[in-house]
Image (cartoon, rainbow, N blue to C red):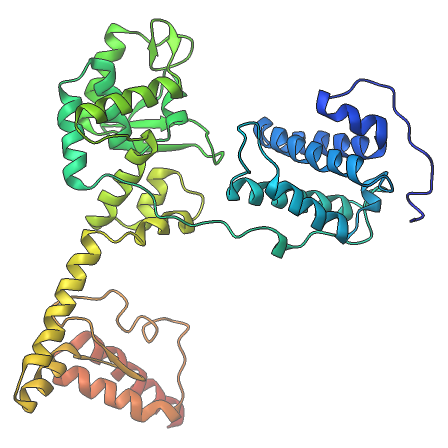
Length: 416
């Protein structure tokens, strides 16, 4: 028993925050009081939904300890065996639906439990154990599935069916498809969300899932549909889009998307798939990842890179192009012809190899280091720089040749 735990016997006869805390309050009130203090701290900086999940997690864990381990009267008593027992219990217990928890639920709850111990130890709370009893290896690795999206033909069928649908259905499909907004963002659009910047309509998307605010360009079709709808249904209650005075909600939006998708013969389609579809269409047509991230409101490019992993038209086209060149090498019977083909694909000489970029395309990164003001070289690299300059001149690349000749001239001055 630790010194912190031996300070006093804790009792509590006040209000209980949730009925599931009752058994904990009776059996081990210190667990409840510490958990509630933590939840109060969490509520200052986290959203209510996050606090609710933390409350649920701590109730489950504290209730398990109170039932199974009479010697545990506070979190200060928690040791590794208690965590291992809880892991086995939580992974196999049945939920209210009569099934074991999903892997993602297990990951979320154990991760939240680890954060709890990490924080109360860092905060030096009296009821904190001497060291964290739950480790990162206890938390299952999150699955990283590819996003579900509609291919171009399916998206066209959905758009065609939406074009002849009821006005609200058409508005919802068009705005989601053209902006990539989340459902909650669509439902939360303020009455002044449509703004004009540089004579172009934009949509101000409210603070949402990632706590960020942004403007995104509004497609003319979507802008027209919004204008037509709001002309007949003026914004009310601070919301841009409402139905008979009631704010649009996510369930209504989901029903609209499912209904139009079924009519288009696409089966079940979730509104978030339209967000994935727009991102996939954009990346397939050369839109930069940074711009896609800004449009979707991603906090980091790591989130946007998900779409770069999709096996789509871009990958297929580049694979077909590369395969054609490889096939040409295999089918050529003249050794000299093979060498000429290889030479035509390797026109750019690098310091330690070759760049196989097709000769007909430009590269913004070419000699980017050598042209930088912070770039430094020494006399030992003079032969390589001379080879680079000669190679550039032979291949009629004056910009490259100028950079390397400038570096060679600088070396001559330094050693002269």
